[in-house]
Image 1: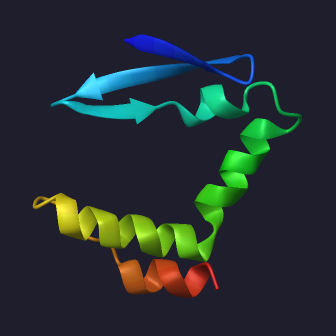
Image 2 (image 1 turned 90 degrees about the vertical axis):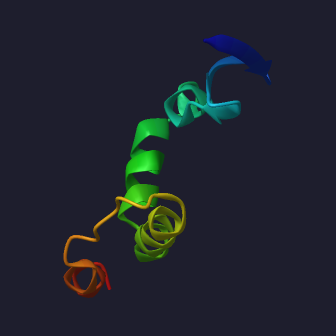
Length: 75
């Protein structure tokens, strides 16, 4: 696990199968209400749709759990 510094904030970088992933929680740690910002983003209808599409494209084992029902609840 590596760390990078961006605007005086250390952010964890994890490499899996030659791909790098950064920690969202590290990115917002020094921002007021940063964790609430991530929570709002994860509840956003567009984010849920994007994550569903991404999983469908890149995860052959992904089975969407009532994705239509999820979309209707988040409108």
